[in-house]
Image (cartoon, rainbow over all chains, first blue to last red; front, side, top):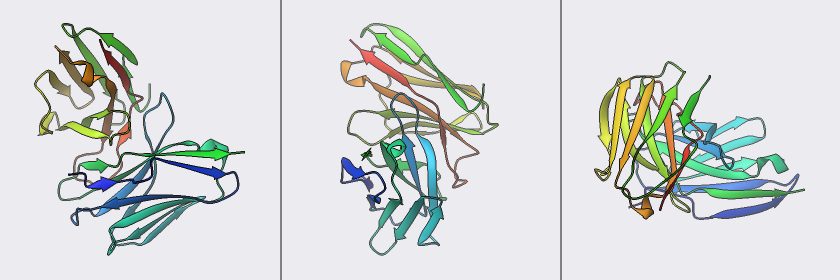
Length: 112
Length: 114
């Protein structure tokens, strides 16, 4: 049973426009969520996180929104840049057990 | 060296070989993890170590054997693997398990089993 799902395997966006990456989860015990970015031949790098007590967290061009009732979170990138092209993983964890559970990843391509 | 390092970066092995993957973290963290990433699949957690003690084995076959001699080093010993074990193996570390903080990943070892 996959507890964290990213239903869009890929997303293509024009430079300067908004990229919206989505993630759904099923485990109500998750109380913090993270987004990681992965370039080819590199390990994932942390991008932004949000705890369940918030519904929005912003860091520069990146904003994560959390809808607890829908068990859904999204990552918004505005404006998108070609250097944002990478695989984005959504991760969810519970402070009661600590480990992270990841989605399948979404390949974002930002065209110049 | 900074962050999390992994060696080798690439490994090709036959099904009868024995090899080991090495991970080292220079962050002073207490928790280390092994993940497997296969194409179009989620990152799969394999093992968790907290203060050198294994706290989780996620139903991983015995042909994968982890070893954590200290909080900075983590090994994954491989023996009689199958072609379907070909994947990217990622090591990560965090301050400790359950802190709710981010994990820092190494670059991974791309493993091909022939």
